[in-house]
Image (tube, rainbow, N blue to C red; front, top):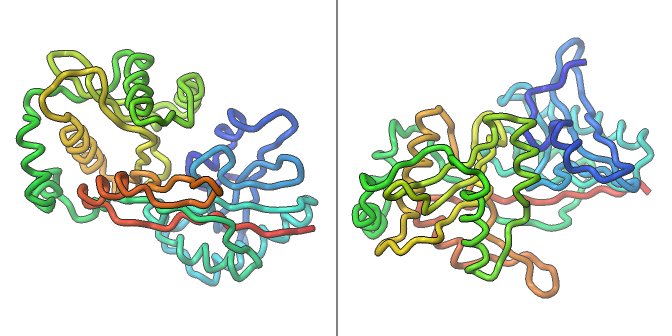
Length: 305
């Protein structure tokens, strides 16, 4: 039985790198006659099935992006029945932002009507690139202050490309987070393992000034239509202007050239002392300046006990 064109976080190879001892990858597929409609993939650990295990999201993968809601409901009903047969006590689905699949609203509709409920929710921010011919179109739509920041940073003074030294470029990301009192949720060894499994779907780019890396961006081609910015930032330089506007410009330029419809800039929420997700105003404002729109990224849960 063939697998659909799954998002990277639903691939059994990703599960194999992240699942703890005793856990197992599980892919539940639904067919209509001989046609594969789609699947729900995840990891079973301690009687819990999680789609999006050790990942930002998982969710339902559809073979056809324009699949009908009726078939999506049939898919969800089928995989719920299969989960019941797996003797799990609970199922969690970390839903993806809509930029990774045109049918995401219908998927959530089907899951909610199949007995799932919202366990928690994040706000993700998506940079919509559909209809843009090049990065200059995107830049022209930005506010005057951002366009000025790009000009003042002088894009011509920088070179953008694949990281020459992954540990050094990754260290820029770590230093950027540390300067803000936070840390990355993934270490270099794990990133390299995912890169080895998925090749060019995992990229670490760097922005160089006078041939010295000053900013970096780690991205995953998380789905066929969108690239996820896992981490980005600048550090270790004494430039008079932040190089971040230039880094964003180059990422947009690359994405449009590759035919992507969106850049997923990740979430802009953090847990408060009680564990409730709350917006980080600084992150939200930065991503809105770039033209990103908010998308809901809920975690849905269903009990089988």
